[in-house]
Length: 78
Image (cartoon, rainbow, N blue to C red; front, side, top):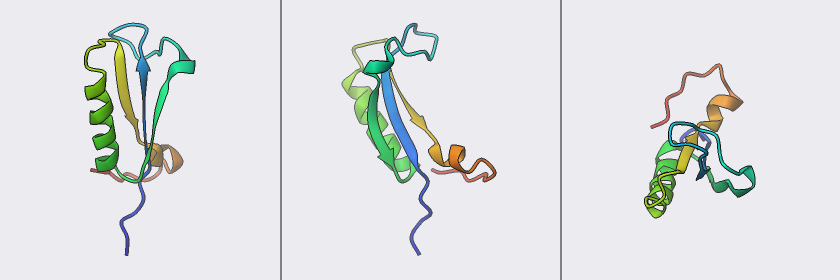
């Protein structure tokens, strides 16, 4: 049996301020992709974060879509 698919979304962009989470321009948000587990999403997140290390306002995030799709589960995906 294959591992349960736990979808994760990686996205990022330039933030309005260093201490916030509001994107400066939603049209410029970088949708990196969907991943079947946390490990794959983290690998993609690290790669994008490394590429943008020189821009302090640029941030990438991992969104646990499986938690939004099925909020009653307490599955931890690492």
